[in-house]
Length: 214
Image 1 (cartoon, rainbow, N blue to C red):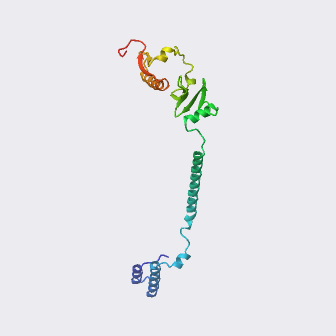
Image 2 (cartoon, rainbow, N blue to C red):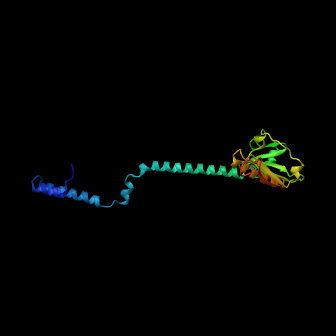
Image 3 (spheres, one colour):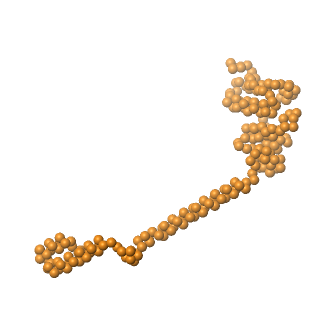
């Protein structure tokens, strides 16, 4: 039965639907109900009430477990990476790479010996360890390709006394062949290597006089 409001009870009393006694009884119950709603809940009653958040505890517990699992995995990964970094024995210099290459400890794509010279791969380039002619000094020269990559390309001419005595070396190219970007790049790299290895200056030149540039 739905509890009526005081106004509804008064209308029922006026219309003769309920008696004065019934009216007084209903008003008393209504006042008790309103008083119970307005009265603050005591600490004892709060403790006796079922924990309304209890239903959420399993979810909260699962979230905490997941966070702990993620944290543990992250710690393991960081520790593993850190240990590999701290205890890594891999070479960090070209000298160490060459030492391992001479000892045969490198994979073929990491380094090999070619005509007695150590050829190693690092930072996207090949490096050859060679001795400067007529000296005991060894230098490292960078190359875009290793000797095994280009040893099938035919080479003509010889390095004779004319080359040895020349202070200036001409880097000649075919001006009608095109690919000038690659030619300029090759001449630039050879220029650096000739200067370091032989102490010679270089200059680009056409091998035929067929263009205005030549």
